Length: 245
Image 1 (tube, helix red, strand yellow):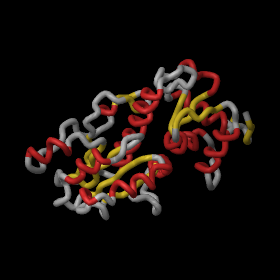
Image 2 (cartoon, helix red, strand yellow):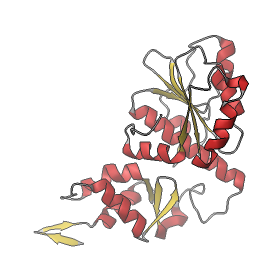
Image 3 (spheres, rainbow, N blue to C red):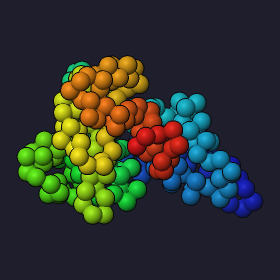
Image 4 (cartoon, rainbow, N blue to C red):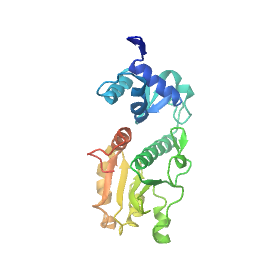
């Protein structure tokens, strides 16, 4: 501990460790940014940058997923789906990563004041089910049933205050994007934003597929957002100038 006057002042590493222990030995960067500075009497002008640097250089901490850090000493206490010491199949990794991105997107929507929905009720985001962080459990009946039958299976939907979809978001890890585009086509007569979230390495494939004649009516409306941008938006809890979310 550092001593400041007569008060015991925790180091940044100690403050970060305390936050992680309060969340089950792990925490998102957003949680660290929100909570760790409150444990210090003087957090400086750039606490977020200090926190980011500390978790990266201090071997007390380990990055276990995008935007998610844990205490290296307590990895065995993490939920199985987050414990990097437990071997997982490629398919299990896809399911876990997909749910993490969905969770980030739901929470970004919540922070921006949208009503949030996902058809994935039991996917795990950190230590919660996705259905426990969405603000609505059922997809609003905002249009014809024949349209809803496909739209309601989009990964994450942000609804505005009038109950219409403001942004529909599909997380694409490995498929060819076409099924997502077919869902988006159902909303071509709405002013809804359409967003694909995928790794940056897949952008060229996205560009090839969206230019197919079949998707001509929406080809200029579908935005590509990388996993990194989703992570940054969630961590900052605000819209970044470079993001299309």
